Length: 117
Image (cartoon, rainbow, N blue to C red):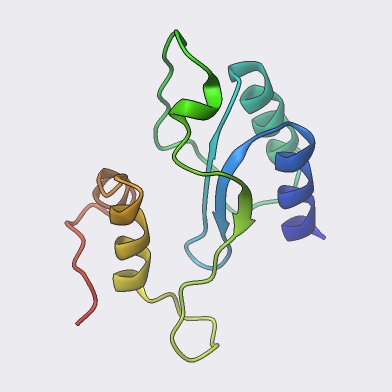
């Protein structure tokens, strides 16, 4: 239910980005700041062992919001190679690099990312 709610809320609030379930999990959203705050409020009301915001970025918009987005939709992403619950950090870093968000990896994990071999 939690995973479905995250995706549904993002769509309801016109947010784009991704969620990566697992340990550790990660949620990255972009959109109108009021909608992002509402999303965060809803997330906090779910039961979590640990939930924290690692980083935020706000900017004044001088063009269309859609022109600034890194993502076109919000979706759940799984980064595993064998359909298991282990996260392939190389695949996760590659995904972030393609979106020009590789700094998130070092912010989140405290180490530089490496592309899969």
